[in-house]
Length: 223
Image (cartoon, rainbow, N blue to C red; front, side, top):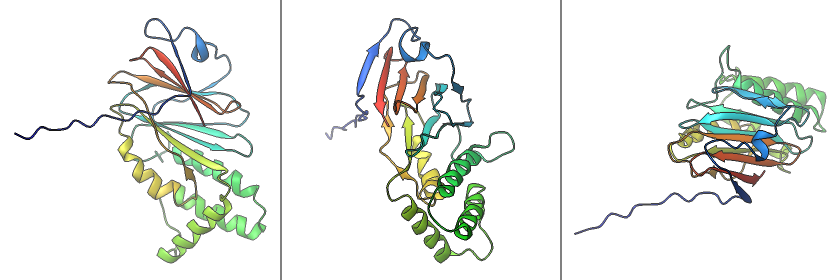
């Protein structure tokens, strides 16, 4: 009789972890926040001045952190769909557009090329294609964006728990991040069970803190 092998999830090992009593971290990083940006479900927010970004209540949702290593501009997304949202209420792709525009603006290239890239970035972040924009033009654009990010200044990281739909990331990577030349680091996979969990990102420290309520621990990761 053939025995089935159950494949265990390989969770990402944290740099450090701290236990706390009960269901909520009344100590540590999450309880010390005074001036921070809260990100609601289905939204994305930017931190321009190194303010921490925080979002609660992940379960089937997953998180993305996008950052500029050059100036610490950072964004946190609470993703509850198969793509980043692009509607009149949520503006998730517009956050991506803004960060990419700022990156291109600071690049040492001609103003003419900047304006051309701005226009294409806008179309892509609206999930549209410019006129006369075929496969060859798309590949040329991606190559140029990768070249402008060859030092991995713009980076992204996906964060998921046990029941998160992080497998949907392939759509976001393929239709958005890869095309924009964004360097995607290895996913963070967290032992959360089917209990809600929370994300905190501190740009000034380049640290991600995950509150795993299942474990009653705050886990710290470098990014």
